[in-house]
Amino acid sequence: MPLSMDTRPSAYAVIIEQGKILLTRWVPSDGKTPAWSLPGGGIDPGEQPYDTVVREVFEETGYDAAPEDLLGVDAGYFDPNAGSDRIFCALRIVYRAHIEGGTLRHEIGGSSDQAKWVPISDLDKIQKVHLVDAAATMMGYANSTDWARRFRERKLAK
Image (cartoon, rainbow, N blue to C red; front, side, top):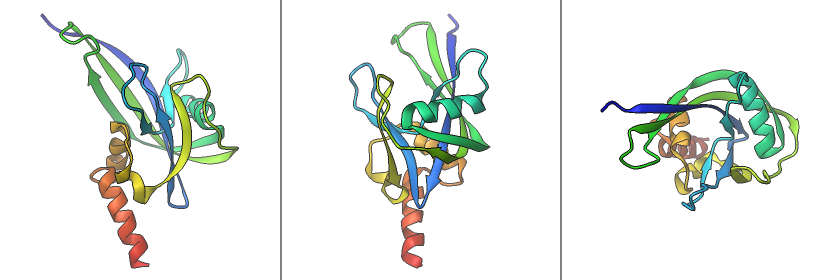
Protein backbone atom coordinates (compact mmCIF):
# COMPACT_ATOMS: atom_id res chain seq x y z
CA MET A 1 0.00 0.00 0.00
CA PRO A 2 1.42 3.44 -0.89
CA LEU A 3 2.29 5.80 1.91
CA SER A 4 0.52 9.09 2.38
CA MET A 5 2.25 12.12 3.81
CA ASP A 6 1.42 15.05 6.08
CA THR A 7 3.65 18.07 5.48
CA ARG A 8 4.44 20.89 7.88
CA PRO A 9 6.20 23.86 6.28
CA SER A 10 8.39 25.91 8.59
CA ALA A 11 10.95 28.70 8.38
CA TYR A 12 14.17 29.25 10.37
CA ALA A 13 16.93 31.83 10.71
CA VAL A 14 20.71 31.58 10.76
CA ILE A 15 21.80 34.63 12.74
CA ILE A 16 25.53 35.12 13.34
CA GLU A 17 27.18 37.95 15.26
CA GLN A 18 30.78 38.24 16.44
CA GLY A 19 31.60 34.57 15.89
CA LYS A 20 28.44 33.31 17.62
CA ILE A 21 25.22 31.81 16.29
CA LEU A 22 21.82 32.38 17.88
CA LEU A 23 20.24 29.06 18.90
CA THR A 24 17.17 27.99 20.83
CA ARG A 25 16.86 24.84 22.92
CA TRP A 26 14.04 22.70 21.56
CA VAL A 27 12.27 20.60 24.19
CA PRO A 28 10.50 17.59 22.63
CA SER A 29 6.99 16.95 23.94
CA ASP A 30 7.68 13.20 24.06
CA GLY A 31 10.30 13.49 26.82
CA LYS A 32 13.32 12.92 24.57
CA THR A 33 16.56 14.82 25.18
CA PRO A 34 16.39 18.58 24.49
CA ALA A 35 18.64 19.80 21.66
CA TRP A 36 19.76 23.12 20.23
CA SER A 37 18.15 24.36 17.03
CA LEU A 38 17.86 27.44 14.87
CA PRO A 39 15.15 29.89 15.92
CA GLY A 40 12.06 29.35 13.82
CA GLY A 41 8.97 27.22 13.47
CA GLY A 42 5.77 26.45 11.65
CA ILE A 43 4.31 28.69 9.00
CA ASP A 44 0.81 29.84 9.97
CA PRO A 45 -1.98 29.54 7.35
CA GLY A 46 -1.68 32.43 4.89
CA GLU A 47 1.71 33.51 6.27
CA GLN A 48 4.79 34.00 4.09
CA PRO A 49 7.99 32.18 5.19
CA TYR A 50 9.83 35.52 5.51
CA ASP A 51 7.16 36.70 7.99
CA THR A 52 7.35 33.40 9.87
CA VAL A 53 11.06 33.98 10.52
CA VAL A 54 10.37 37.46 11.90
CA ARG A 55 7.55 36.20 14.15
CA GLU A 56 9.28 33.04 15.37
CA VAL A 57 12.62 34.70 16.13
CA PHE A 58 10.78 37.27 18.25
CA GLU A 59 8.65 34.63 20.02
CA GLU A 60 11.62 32.39 20.81
CA THR A 61 14.37 34.94 21.51
CA GLY A 62 12.91 38.42 22.03
CA TYR A 63 14.87 39.79 19.07
CA ASP A 64 13.53 41.67 16.05
CA ALA A 65 15.08 39.88 13.08
CA ALA A 66 15.35 40.84 9.43
CA PRO A 67 15.77 37.97 6.95
CA GLU A 68 18.39 38.74 4.31
CA ASP A 69 18.51 35.89 1.84
CA LEU A 70 17.32 32.34 1.38
CA LEU A 71 20.02 29.80 2.28
CA GLY A 72 18.11 26.68 1.29
CA VAL A 73 15.43 24.12 2.07
CA ASP A 74 15.74 20.94 4.13
CA ALA A 75 13.23 18.10 4.42
CA GLY A 76 13.03 15.59 7.23
CA TYR A 77 10.80 12.52 7.10
CA PHE A 78 9.40 10.81 10.18
CA ASP A 79 7.08 7.92 10.92
CA PRO A 80 5.33 9.19 14.07
CA ASN A 81 3.25 6.02 14.36
CA ALA A 82 5.80 3.31 13.59
CA GLY A 83 4.56 1.12 10.80
CA SER A 84 1.60 3.29 9.83
CA ASP A 85 0.79 4.17 6.25
CA ARG A 86 1.25 7.92 6.93
CA ILE A 87 4.59 9.65 7.21
CA PHE A 88 5.34 13.20 8.29
CA CYS A 89 7.48 15.61 6.30
CA ALA A 90 9.03 18.61 8.05
CA LEU A 91 9.82 21.03 5.22
CA ARG A 92 12.24 23.65 6.58
CA ILE A 93 13.02 26.90 4.76
CA VAL A 94 16.23 28.50 6.06
CA TYR A 95 17.12 32.19 5.78
CA ARG A 96 20.22 34.13 6.73
CA ALA A 97 19.07 37.00 8.97
CA HIS A 98 20.35 39.73 11.26
CA ILE A 99 19.14 41.35 14.47
CA GLU A 100 17.61 44.82 14.26
CA GLY A 101 16.57 45.25 17.89
CA GLY A 102 15.07 43.64 20.95
CA THR A 103 16.55 41.99 24.02
CA LEU A 104 17.49 38.34 24.44
CA ARG A 105 14.95 36.40 26.49
CA HIS A 106 13.66 32.83 26.73
CA GLU A 107 10.36 31.64 25.30
CA ILE A 108 7.67 30.77 27.83
CA GLY A 109 5.09 28.10 27.04
CA GLY A 110 6.47 27.24 23.61
CA SER A 111 8.52 24.46 22.08
CA SER A 112 11.81 25.95 23.29
CA ASP A 113 12.92 26.90 26.79
CA GLN A 114 16.20 28.76 26.22
CA ALA A 115 17.82 31.06 23.69
CA LYS A 116 21.51 31.87 23.64
CA TRP A 117 24.47 32.88 21.53
CA VAL A 118 26.70 29.84 21.00
CA PRO A 119 30.28 30.25 19.77
CA ILE A 120 30.54 28.71 16.31
CA SER A 121 33.72 27.01 17.53
CA ASP A 122 31.57 25.08 20.06
CA LEU A 123 28.99 23.70 17.62
CA ASP A 124 30.66 20.30 17.71
CA LYS A 125 30.34 20.17 21.53
CA ILE A 126 26.58 20.61 21.95
CA GLN A 127 23.52 18.41 21.48
CA LYS A 128 21.79 19.78 18.37
CA VAL A 129 19.10 18.90 15.87
CA HIS A 130 19.85 17.91 12.27
CA LEU A 131 18.77 21.34 11.03
CA VAL A 132 21.94 22.96 12.43
CA ASP A 133 24.05 20.59 10.30
CA ALA A 134 21.79 21.19 7.30
CA ALA A 135 22.25 24.96 7.67
CA ALA A 136 26.03 24.52 7.88
CA THR A 137 25.90 22.55 4.62
CA MET A 138 23.80 25.31 3.02
CA MET A 139 26.59 27.72 3.96
CA GLY A 140 29.29 25.59 2.29
CA TYR A 141 30.51 23.40 5.16
CA ALA A 142 30.32 19.62 5.39
CA ASN A 143 28.35 19.89 8.66
CA SER A 144 28.41 21.85 11.91
CA THR A 145 31.49 19.96 13.15
CA ASP A 146 33.38 21.04 10.02
CA TRP A 147 32.10 24.61 10.51
CA ALA A 148 33.34 24.66 14.13
CA ARG A 149 36.73 23.18 13.18
CA ARG A 150 37.29 25.60 10.32
CA PHE A 151 36.20 28.54 12.49
CA ARG A 152 38.73 27.52 15.18
CA GLU A 153 41.47 27.16 12.54
CA ARG A 154 40.75 30.66 11.17
CA LYS A 155 40.93 32.12 14.68
CA LEU A 156 44.29 30.41 15.30
CA ALA A 157 45.68 31.65 11.97
CA LYS A 158 45.03 35.30 12.89
